Image 1: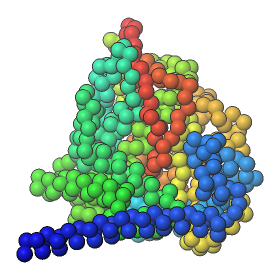
Image 2 (image 1 turned 60 degrees about the vertical axis):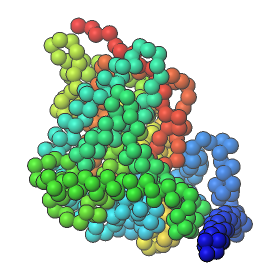
Image 3 (image 1 turned 45 degrees about the vertical axis):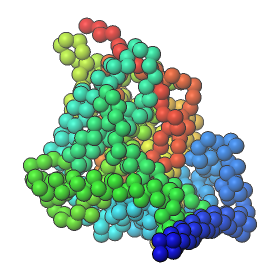
Image 4 (image 1 turned 180 degrees about the horizontal axis):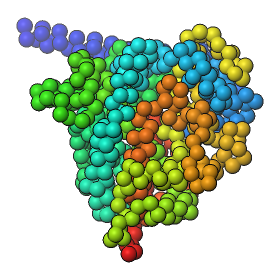
Length: 504
C-alpha cells in the first residue's frame, strides 16, 4: 500500500513538473509569436521597426531621449508609434487640448487602470469619473488646509534635523562615497510614510537599515511599470493567471504592502484617529471601506516618495555642473534668513516664499529632468488635435514633459542649457504656461501636492548647501535613467561630502 501511494505521488509530481514546464514553454512561444506577428504583420515604418528591434539603443541610452529626437524632427511636434497604438506629443497646444479643452475625452482609461490596478486599486491616480472627482475633492480639502501643510513641514524639518544632517556629517571629509539618490529615496519614504500612515519606517537612520516595506513597495512599483512595456498585455495577464515570473514577485510584494496597510488601519480603529494628522486618519473620518482607504493612501505614497527623490537627485547633479547656481542660492539664503550666531537655519515657510532664485533653480531643474517623464490618456472618441493630428477612438495619447523641456520650438535655442534666470523678471519668479511646462500636469488633474513637494525640496536643498559641499564623484557622467513609473538614475548618484567651514 505504501509502495502504491509512493508511486501515485511520484506520478503526480512528474505530471505537475511536465505541466509547469509546458506552461512555461507555451508562454515563451506565445511571446515570440506576438513579437513576430507585430514585426511581420504590423507597421513596417522605420520608427516602429526601431522600437520592435530595439535598434534605437545604438544611439540612445534612454527611450525618452529617442522619443525626444523623433519629436524634435517632427514638423508638428507629434509622432505616432503604430505598433503601440500610441500618439506622442510635445506640442503645448495639444497638451492644453488633452488636459483642458477636451478633458472628458481623455481619461486615464481602462488599459492604464489594468496595468496599475493590482498596486493602486481604485486610488486617485488610477480612476476616472465620479470616483476620481470624489477623491480629488476630498484630497483638495485635506492638502489645502493650513494644518496639514504645517504638519507636513514639521515632519520634513524633523527628518532633516534628526537624520539627514547627522548622516551627511557622519561621512563628511572621509572620502567615503555616498549614494545621494538612495539617501533621498530613504528620506522621502520616511516622510511620506509619516505623512500618509503616521508610520516611521526609519529608513534614514545612520545604519541605513533595509526596510522590508520599502523594498516591497519599490519592487511592486517597478514590476507594475514593466507591464506597460510588454509587447502585448496578454503576456503579463497570462503570467498573472499562471502566477509565474515577475507576476508572482509582484503578487508577493503587493501582499506585503497590503498587510502593512491593513495593520495600520486596524491600529487606527483600535486607538482612535480623530486627534491624529496623518492622511489615513483624516480619510478614515469619512470612509469606512478598508480596501478603499488602502488604495487612496498607497496612491499618495507612490506620488510623494519617488517624485521628490527623483527631483532632488537631478537637482544636485545639475548643481555639480553649475557651481555659480549653488553660490547664488547661498547668497539668497544669506539675505533672507540668518541667525545671530552665524549659522543658517531651516527657513520658515514664509521665508522660502521670498527666495525667488531658489524657486527658479528648482523649476529649471524639473524642466530638464521631470520625475514623471511622460503621461498617457486614452481617447474615448475620435478627435483631431490642434496640430491637425487625427486621434482614433481607443488610441493611447501621451504628452511628454521630458521631451517638451528639450524642444527648441518650445523653450528657445538655449533649451538644453540649465538657466534659472529664464524664470525670473526683475529678480522675481514668473510662472510659465502650465501646458508648456506640464511637470505637475495641468488643467483639472494638476498635482494637488505641488506646493508641498516644492517646499520639501527647498527644505532639503537649503539644509544641505548651507552646511555641506556636495561633489559628484563622476561629474562628467550624464544621468542615465532606468525604466519605471518615475525617473531614477541607473547606478544612483555617488557623491563626496565635505562639511563647510563656519564663518561668523
